[in-house]
Amino acid sequence: MSADVSTNTPSKLEKILRAGHLAVTSECGPPRGSDSAAILKKAEMIKDHVDAINITDNQTSVTRLCSLASCIHLKLAGYEPVLQMVVRDRNRIALQSDLLGAASFDINNVLCLSGDHQAFGDNPQGQNVFDLDSMQLIQTVRLMRDDGKFLGGDEIKRPPRMFVGAAANPFADPFEIRVPRLAKKIAAGAEFIQTQCIYNLDKFKEWMKQARDRGLHEKVFILAGLTPFKSAGMAKYMKNRVPGMDVPDEVVKRMSGVPKEKQPEEGIKICIESIQRLKEVEGVKGFHIMAIEWEEKVPRIVEEAGLYPRPQA
Amino acid sequence: MIVAERKPIEEIIEEAKGFDRILVAGCNECVTVCEAGGKKEVGVLASALRMYFMNQGREVKVDEVTLERQCDHEYLEEIRNIIDNYDAVISLACGVGVQFMAEKYFHKPILPGVNTVFMGATEERGVWSERCQGCGKCILAKTGGICPVSRCAKRLFNGPCGGSSQGKCEISDELPCAWQLIVDRLKELGRLDEYEEIMPIKDWSTDRAGGPRKVVREDVRQ
Image 1 (cartoon, rainbow over the protein chains, first blue to last red):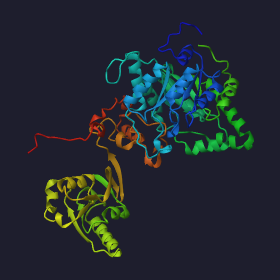
Image 2 (image 1 turned 120 degrees about the horizontal axis):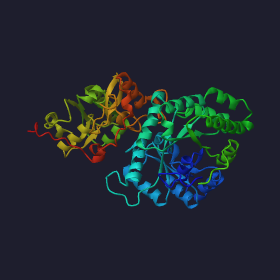
Image 3 (image 1 turned 180 degrees about the vertical axis):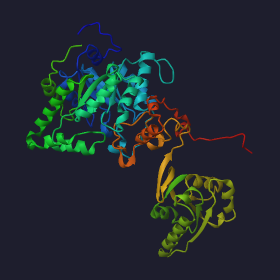
């Protein structure tokens, strides 16, 4: 990689994207306990095959080891973490404070999210916060980074230097504002996007086309999100039970069409084929592979999708 | 209006069973409209209590009254002459009425007979739904007249989360997605382009977050 690529932050992910490489990220869910070995073990499986590792923030509202501490463990082990932050559980004081905490360990990537509603998790009776929304969290990180200011206006000594990401779900409703919503996130300051899992490639392509028509693909790095199915049951569950997920019938049929013991293999094949097709879509700048509790399969997916070896940054 | 729900009779009995003289006090405003604490519900609760005490072999006096409002001094004063005939009052007013009565009759136990749930509207008889959380800074002009604070489960200000599906919220198929409603209305008004204006970070100091609130109008104050 050339040394003269201009970046806004020391983020390795940013360097790789700005140098024009297809980036590969993945994610690890922290354990439901305090054993840091659990998170490091997952990271070790994928470290040579991805450019950065997202750590989820109490995903599906189930209480887990926190994203920030998990990211610190990764950083200290020499990996490149992406700190996922949801606005569900913390007010603006806690969010800014945690951003500084992450910055103190030179964690250089953040993904700003709303977070699943607590009704899905292990504490449905809990209060939620939503002091900011995800859009406003993006603005907050950019203010802290670019202006070196807190939301309250005071100066930050040694501001965070984070590459700022956001999520996009091309498949949620109402569809007509999905691209405007992307535009809004970019206007708020998002520099990279990781999408919801893509199974309906036609609908994704339509979304990308609308994004390209507005030139948005040149203003933000869009990483296409993928999750391999482990079974036909998982495909059906995602189709019917996970809000905002679009799994076409033919994909479910394909998974169901092979014997149970071969379904994991079929799921991986679908994932690899999808990456290969998505590589052809103008504006896709990389892939975010969310192999849920199946991290050991990420290296194979990356290799067979022709995304290995990873560039050095 | 303020919408309330009747408390389970077991819970009311548990709180009231130690008293010998009980006044059940309804309110003729919101709780009458939402059929939780008006004259009719006062009658139903009083009968149920009488039945309970009779079955227990106890002689307990249970009387009924329904005030025009329990959130005004003027109407609360109407029971001043009779309140000492009772050991406790079960108020079927909203939480405001219960508290205002307790402030006025400081020496008397005032028990709530309803759960106050929200500010909302009557969709149809028997169906009420939330419309306002009293955040103290109304933004309905910007959101097509639909409130994301009270109607979005995550009170998002800048559009639907990724869980909006076929017009419904991710937490329930029964619940409309507020942002679907907002987008539909902005479209109807020919103002969908306004969706892309980023709604600034909200000042929650006028909300519950800023502590108990008070409105003082010097021009109408006596």
